[in-house]
Length: 193
Figure 1: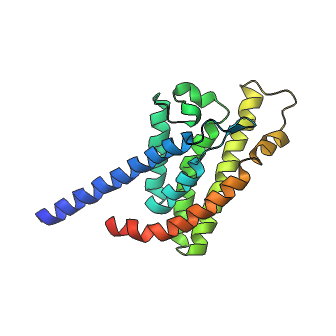
Figure 2: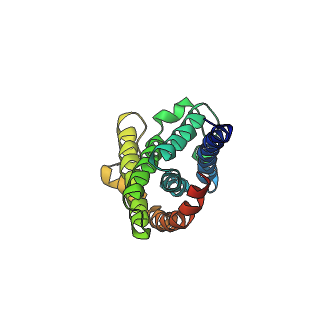
Figure 3: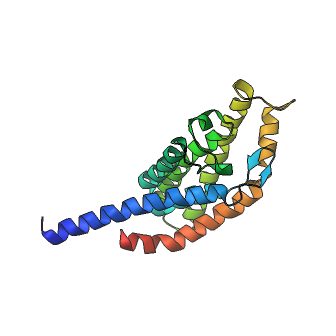
């Protein structure tokens, strides 16, 4: 290998690490940008938006890694989760399933975008990513309330999904915007990778 090739490879790896760290930081910002807006026990955040963008812009593997880094930073005690929370006790919270779902969201969105590299494909990937987030997170929330957390009186599976109706319009709009924004931004990012 020539010196130029080694330097180029090191530069590319460094840039990839910076992108992974950037999305972990964006998740922390997105988690707390609206941290005081809580409806039905569900904090309204921009995390799904950034998880979708991570999958689109970084790809399935690196996007998922950036979400793993975010989750590990929060579990280590840094207050990066919604409502400026963090720590190992977050694992038993009803909303921890959403944090785990971001790893799947980034991975699934990245895979779909790799297979459907069109504007329509990006939007479809973003909407599927949002659905993964809702399915995993809401089912975790329901299980947490039923099995180990104090459920509100009369809490049912239907009620858990009713709570998700509140952020749904915002997340649908942001998912479509993430798909469109990612489609425009991906060629720029790829140029530097």
